Length: 452
Image (cartoon, rainbow, N blue to C red; front, top):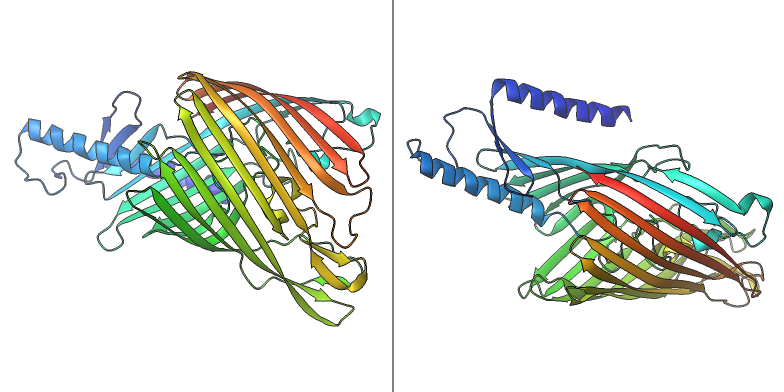
């Protein structure tokens, strides 16, 4: 926390010093971000322009630089689940060799749960209690931990081309309600490469709908990973492919015969995407992930490695300007990290109940579908269904263990201004065990969020 405060303190001090020692010119065009051009000397020229130019030429050059700065930052403002909005202000030098922006949002969520409240700040069907108690009848929560701050920097270089640096923080780093800062992502992009921490390559960012609930549909797979990724778009950006090596995270059931050991092989996700539409706003994507998971087998006195694998089909289709569809379906073995409801569940692998010295990966699948109806340019409603299932293998999974989770939602979002949003949402989550026993929970969410 101290480092983060020092970082922003240093930025504030440097901006103050710059304002006092140099020249800052402010440009704003309609609803676009305000651009502040910082000049080291008042006689600086733009993009190699002659020092002696008419006021009209100077203004045209300044407008060209301002537009270039705005387009650079628009290029890297991604759409999709939990992505930041455009910043209010951008700072750039007079030639746009480097620019940076600081932005974020303050978000307050209020949630009222009833009928077996989920012991989680989000709606996670896996956590629905199977036995009703007086303690989980009803619950009220207020949550601002998803508020966020980000920094984006863009350098236009001769040798490496455009270099993009991004860093963002929210307050979900510790126990629920602790407001511990968390580094969500921090990466550098250049020449098609992404190096650092970002959303997993297996995740299709625009394949899931917007929800107030931070976890979202339980069959989705929004997870961060430290990675090296390469992406390439071709055929006028109709086609795009990506492949990555990502830091693995394993969640298995070890029992008495198995022991955890450090992992030594990265996960390898890849995808191939086809996009269409005027701005390539619609797409379908095929993805896969391969995992090599290590553990120590006490019964055999040696290490075991297991192959985990998964495939996914996903998409986002704009039927008309009023109707948008979202979808994804995932199937595999040993991929609990890549299905929202199963993260940390211990289902990547388990002992084989028919032979305690043998370990096995567990099969699982999930799918979600949703629709968004745009009633007005600043008002939309959406709803959808999501389900996750874990399959038995060699008799493993006892009657009281998880078999299936369901997630149903409906919401309305109203953008009072481009930066202020109000929303309301209903959620239904249910859990079914191997025995057939079922339980469910209901939740109502409201949201107020202001972006800056």
